[in-house]
Image 1 (spheres, rainbow, N blue to C red):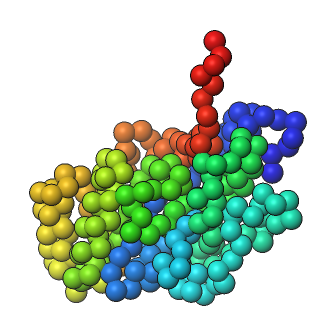
Image 2: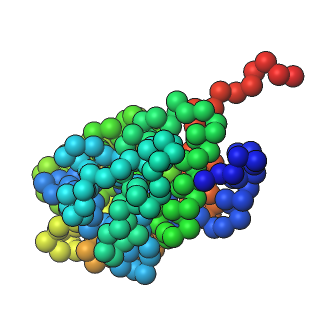
Amino acid sequence: MLDGREDQAAGLRRLFRRAPPQVVALYAGGRLRTDNAVLAAHRIAGRAERVLILDEAEGSETLADTLGVASGTDLLQLLDGRTTLSAVLQPVPGLVGRVPAAAAALALPLLDDARRACLVEALRILHRHAGFVLVHASGEQAAEPSPFVQAAPRRLVVAEASASGATEAYQTIKGLAAAGAGSVHVAVCRARGRKDAAAFFDSLEKLVRRHVGVPLAWLGELERDDIAAGLREPLQTTPRAAGAAFLRRVADMGRVPDVGRG
């Protein structure tokens, strides 16, 4: 954790000397939504990427059962001084692991600078071991994004090729648009083939263009295409700079500006 002798700015300067991972807010829908989210994580990891999941979903939306781990200790509990980072990180075969983060995401804007700095430093340590960080969130909360989702430079919707998958993908994208998302990446899963997946995306894209107006970036089929490569394509800034921006945004969340100083 941050040494008490150094301020938050110094800690962040040290943090950004190392290139951070790609950070992506992950939403999955359909009849097998948690399976689809885990499939996305493993598909990205399968391209020689080390994937860390920050799981801020709750209840039946959490990935714990699908990953075969317990509900776990939330990242926020690091602040009690008795919990270690190794106790928070849940190793998962094929991935860096899962970190439960629902409480941390909720509390972050309410923390003082010192406690927020501790969480940022914990993320820095976790980031050192990851090529991708997936912030897994519930599509039902897309219109009210957490600080972690707000800080992530990219949003990925995994759309199951089914009636429920189409409905949930559309509602999630609509929520993201309401929250100010500029564009959304989409990968289709469980289609009968490439032609079926492309047709599913085309239908979704037309619906979103007509009623929502957010551009969709097609990443292909989750089971067959290199999703990681698509997520690395530059945005308005470089992917690495966007990853660094994630931690800067997290560090700044909830800070009250000094309006009385001049």
